[in-house]
Image (tube, rainbow, N blue to C red; front, side, top):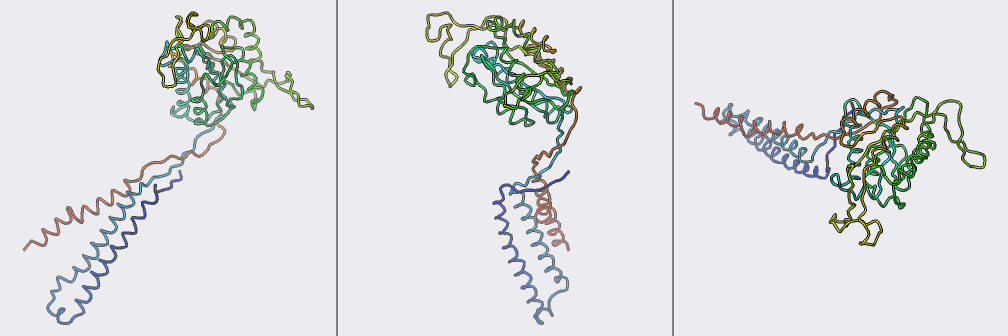
Length: 385
């Protein structure tokens, strides 16, 4: 494991030039004693027991300079750069399909609202890819937001967890202008992403995690076509082909090239919840009405539609879970990844650890013997008859 040492900020090392001034008393001490010993009259009456004192004092100044140097180095905030090698896994790709409709943001039946609760589920799953001892490594991640429409290329597959989380945090109800909750659009966007990014081999499993409150009204209208969208998503022979004109058509290839599993996670409660309006500071300003801008119209409400999410998970070959059951969600997520992943590479991952103890310890020890226990021994020896 390669180790490097840096000082941050390096400007603090400018104080090390002060150590040069410690050379002056050492030289003066040496010249003073040398001149004294070169005088025959002084040398005649000088006790031989005092001759080693020059060597002791020079040694004292050198030790003091070394201790001060260690102290300056510790002040410069030394950090040890340790390079770990993080594993990169293939044959598993994870795509989060996240509902960012208005009902997700304005329904507060969970704290602080459904959208933030959904993001927290995703954060925990991504954090497990970094902290869990068995899962730890880099995996291909993708993110598809949807409401009344979907963005299939919002974040294509990346192995950067920080990039994924950055895009996740930027999602809001303004990301997609079309209102509503179209699960059909979400499935079609996922299919589009897989067509544009085919897997390297048939053993690769594409794990889709759709998180939504169901969109009860839109879900009823779309249930007749949801089954076909789920069937296309799961079709292992479905592939894109480009004509010479540049036009893309969907064809059926001879060998299977896709293995997709779609799990769904429900956010919210089954009881109707009024949709609240808040300003940018988070202050409550009123309720959302069915007819926007008309406060006399009934208050708009939202209800978690678990039934459509269960049907969708069944058609997608996965399972439905409520977001409260996070432990089960994580266990199933982990088991599926461990069963299919394949280590493909290792990449360097630098981390920084403080190395101040390396310099403070010797500085303390030297100063202790110069001014502490060692100084006390010298005084005792000097006073002894």
